[in-house]
Image (cartoon, rainbow, N blue to C red):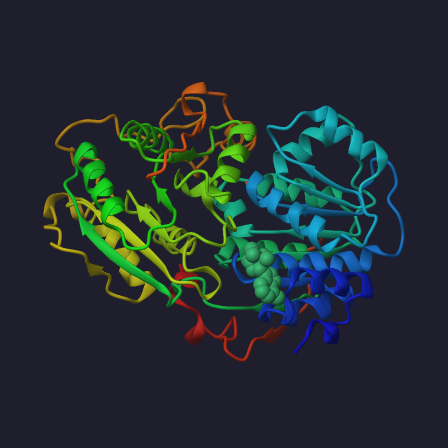
Length: 478
Ligand code: AMP
């Protein structure tokens, strides 16, 4: 199958050709013709499957008819994080090179003035994080009654981040007659309920099991004491001894640990930068660019900041902490070994990480090999809580509590109250010079009625039908 057979416009095909892609990915092959037929689509796919082009390309074709009116965007794409929104924006620029469309990016951390100017001129495409979009709407800068196509991307991530009430509000502001494209990597019951509520007679396309780690990634577990100081020494040894290390993303569970680890690596002379939800947007963009350009070799990151980032060539992923959610592990290591390249993923495991470690092995359905000694589980700690038992005391207290943007104790992606939601992480980060993600480059180193008809199911040959209980991977049944 080639792109020509999908029904895309000439201008779009020319841009695809210029990008060097010749064969559509399974999600593109399955979704594009339906989007072009104005159908609602439920896409079960994660990043890395080419899903962005799966909606950007047909949207560009459909947008060729008609023009934008001031303050009334024609299409609206909702993304959970700024980085993902920026990535979608890049896709519109790349594939829309033969179009004269106005594309607006509404994300937190960027001045309202600039964004207002674009809205005033009229946007064909509006890409936004939910909080910033509602801010503009509440200020009367935006009308959503002209939206013809609504894309809700990374719906499960929106759920994790507490954005669902915002999404429900936005959907009520968009016309009933819209076309809706809804993407999610996983389909927990809440997301399934939303899909039924938002979509009208959708075509369902599903590609690749999100819980499977790419076969090109070598995964290793490395035993370490609980103490952070010793874990950092273990990490440095891993970095120093890693084979063919070009660059690496190092994941921590908490923002405060991202900042501490980055400072420590910096002090030890490594070329490192930091990426987490409390950093201002300028620092985040600059750090990410420096990493993509190879000016920073090591990127210390939190899950929220790094999820879905498309950085094609990452040779190594280090899990400084065993992830609290097993699914985060799969997303973390998926930053390496992309597009068929080889990748290596190391996970530092301490005696109190038994539950988290076992949950990961269970999810991926594989035994992770140990690099050197295996860890001796602390039986008292291992069976309580995921990842790290609350009352398992580290040998040396390093203030290991989670940190929210208002300085409280909270895991980065787990908002509980409505009032916290829009303040959180990706939307309006606290400016904190200490965690600014500076980098040194030394050479080492974000309603319609319910139950709308039946879902037509279209599936890739290689993939299982969604809905048949026996085919539903374990993580989808949670
Ligand atoms: P996404 O899942 O949208 O984050 O895309 C992941 C990566 O796949 C991006 O780097 C895209 O540029 C790339 N990509 C998208 N479509 C294709 C295609 N048809 N062939 C090869 N690579 C693609």
